[in-house]
Image 1 (cartoon, one colour):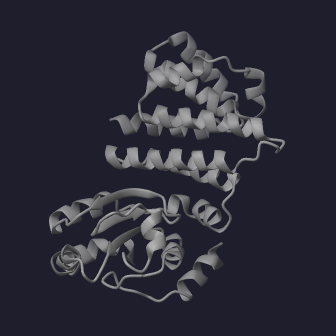
Image 2: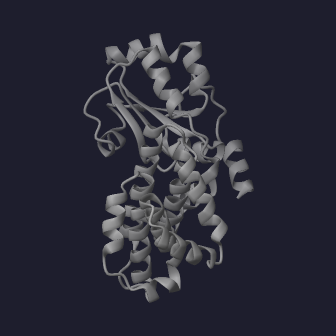
Length: 282
């Protein structure tokens, strides 16, 4: 995999932040290799506000410094209609921050001044090395398995984010990849029921990280075959129950699910997630 990232760098022009890529596929490769998000500027030569942003925002040294943390991509509103339509662009300037697979974290329509732009760029200045391999695998071969692994990575990544708005955005991205996992499943495959079950559990995991404990509780109240869960998805189920009863202060159930967690093959993974979840609330 390291050789792949090195080749991506060697085969791609070395652009400064003031120079914009114009091809999405190239920008995606660079984003994966450099662990950056992509900043897309939908613009046109005839667009007055676009020119004003070039003059008053993108050319400012302070903005250039922060923009260096992104892969800058410029899309011509008139000639690159496929991308314009794909992202539902109805006016310009239209600025989008997306991950290396094109999933949107933030968008804004209309002119924004230097300070407004800097606030957004600083907020979403994320290093995506945490999910680099999973992003690369999904980008190269979208499948239910690569989408699921990436969704789980975004779930874990959210626990390390301090900004509540950014954390919410990353969790929404995790849910989007879970939805894609479901779309890529084949109902005829032998592990279909197990995968469907795992998707539902991880969607409840998103709700847990969002603090939607009532929703998690309603999900866990549904009739679930625990023996079936023990075969494949028991760890996630234990984790959800422990976190919920810990929040409710139900000592009997806390002890029950704590014991279940400690009997898992990899309990340290879930205890680390729990400690990060608690820390993220402080």
